[in-house]
Image (cartoon, rainbow, N blue to C red; front, top):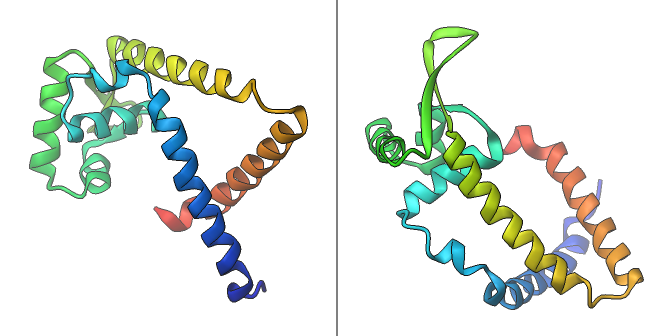
Length: 153
């Protein structure tokens, strides 16, 4: 078992550096993200569906920390805008899943690509050894996330 006191100082350093990195990266957030005509709850739903795939309305409500009725209203507006569709769950016809529509996938996929390109340009100024360190650190974070995903849900 790892001594948590030994972890606290490096964790705080990492969090401080993460904050600084975010402040460095935020100015390169593509203007397309800032021009989205979505409310914050709508953006959260679209991001949830883009990153996680189709989910039940109850999952959306739980993840947003809102009532089922509120989540339904948010999704209704996204359906009206053509960004989300509702469909039956092939494994349980009583369940309705929400997923991004083709238009929603295009919008989010395009925004994701623009963001990736900007980060790619930023990373091109780094030395190969720095890139290797970043890759190893991100691999460790992904592995830690995979190991705790069940615990976090």
